[in-house]
Image (tube, rainbow, N blue to C red; front, side, top):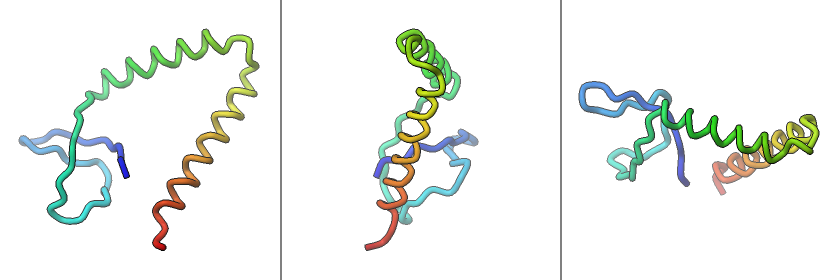
Length: 83
């Protein structure tokens, strides 16, 4: 399952800032997205969303985002449980 995580580039090596679940010697595909660029892109996305959802009350948006986040978390937890 795809996983995103933050890392620091030190001495020519990417070091994850938290443990990641991989078997030793696993090969992975890494796409580097500098945090400053990611933040800028994300902030632009949020501004566009706010413009498009002006007619929807903020509490409704927050409720829907909270529900969607809970669904994604529950799905991930279910996928991690051994069969």
